[in-house]
Image 1: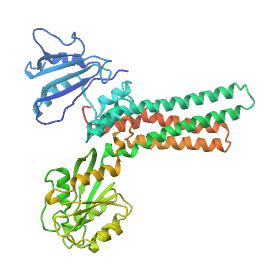
Image 2: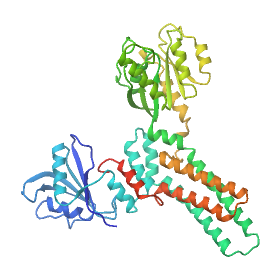
Image 3: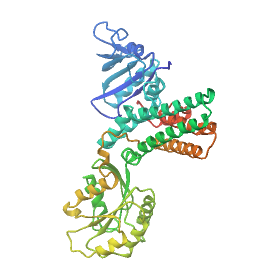
Amino acid sequence: MEYDTIAAVSTPMGEGAIAIVRLSGEEAVSIADKIYKGPGSKRLAGVESHTIHYGHLRDPKTGNTVEEVMISIMKGPKTFTREDVVEINCHGGIVSVNRVLQLVLSQGARLAEPGEFTKRAFLNGRIDLSQAEAVMDLIRAKTDKAMNVALGQMEGRLSQLIRKLRQEILETLAQVEVNIDYPEYDDVEEMTHRLFMEKAHFVRGEIKKILRTSEQGKILREGLSTVIIGRPNVGKSSLLNSLVHENKAIVTDIPGTTRDVIEEYVNVRGVPLRLLDTAGIRETEDIVERIGVERSRAVLKDADLILLVLNNSDELSEEDELLFQAVEGMDVIIIINKTDLPRKINIERVKQLAPTQRMVSTSLLEDEGIDELEEAISSLFFEGAIEAGDLTYVSNSRHIALLGQALQAIEDSIDAIESGTPVDLVQIDFTKAWELLGEIIGESVHESLIDQLFSQFCLGK
């Protein structure tokens, strides 16, 4: 399959030592050759694949030198897109990069759409759809563990499992067709039901095994939405700063200093947290502070984890008790802060209000208790299982949804077999499961979905 030649900047914009302008397509080498001036009469068209060449770029119209560059030539199909690929390494200034890109576009290349290089890798059979999605997961990974999950998926670990399950289903459907078309025994219906049941139980078990990792995988991919709540001046902003190891939030003794929700990403023992420091939830006449309080209440609804901060040196107030009610049924860690001050809080009452929730004592002023808090966060969600290197983690929401639908189709087929439903109707559920699994790796997926997925990629990837 042949496409036009595309080009884009593949490194972040801004000042840097080096930037890369990438081309891919049938004319990639010839376009680069038109603007390349190397030592002597050297041309790029005749060089060997996967070699790099020093020289200058010149505008053919004016003859002026545009940039000093190193150009990598990689000829298909042994490239990321399976097309001819050229990477122009130039100086990393904004003006320099734009000049090189504009020069390339003036010679016949088209500006690539977001994710179009990876899309071509998929369309040309270099990778499947789940591997393509893992490319963006790799770029966006915020912890080493998240990166390892993305690497495993990009290497095809999930794809191999999905293909194995699809093959099992396909072989079963083929065997059933043989039994129906060439019956050698009178009890062909019973034999076929038995075959279906055996395979259905196997596929169901394998899908469930994959889905068991989905909660942890999704956390690694998207991060835990973690909300810090508490009355004003209990130490919420100090907690944010301690976890981030940076003074991101203003800390004072004046209640109501935090007027809005502050968002920050932090890595806590391999768990990526999207940390939200909220305005102290209380009744207030200050209009700006009241808006912050309302926003604080709103973010609670979508939180995965609540860090409820209490003041060790204050008695529990009515506002504290209302906060316990607001987070009832959610994953909560209670933080008793300011343990460097005399205790006035009623710990027994705290345990009554949250009998099943974990409790950690801290003195953020003296940097005490943070290690215990980080351990509590990590163990609450992963309990050590994330260290198992042989597991294939499914982290993508689209994959999780499709696996759930495929599992339901298999469950429906089992129910149908147990109720004596005719074989041709059982086949429908099996075929549906096969198609749903195919959507994960892109073997049965609509073109509109492909366009939508790749539009979320960054430009140049």
